[in-house]
Length: 156
Image 1 (cartoon, rainbow, N blue to C red):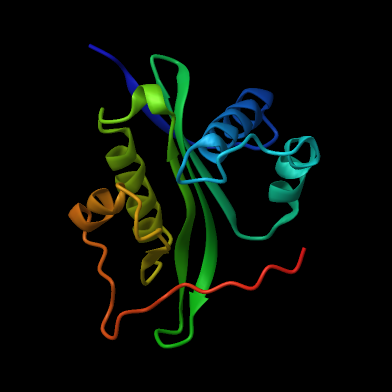
Image 2: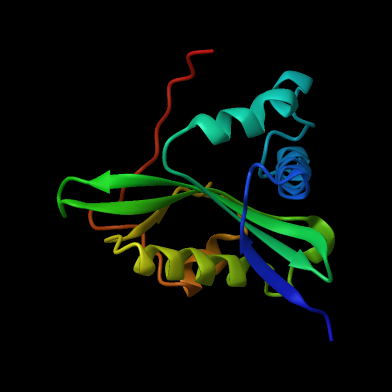
């Protein structure tokens, strides 16, 4: 039986930092990412920038001690509920570990953390063509009424 462990990442721990970089880079290479490895400057700066950013929350999934997935989240605030929230910015499971319940375990861990922190909700954005949408739907995520769209304007 394989051992799955979900931990809150300590970005000062070199093993955790390395796992975040490894999983995030694998996600970047995926068709749901940017379909290429992260640029060297991003790999060099990501952990330090996450450490500096207020409200960063990273959860790591280790399967038999190997980094298998990560949820990179940020605390936010809901003005309509006057309460904090957690936004799942990236939820990534390395390809060789998919379909083993790791994404589900990460989702459960994020929700547990949100409840412990008395957050009013957990949010995320997902591409329309992302097969992980079914994972999010199974975990109670809805499109909202009215349906919301995520928009962006790249500045760099």
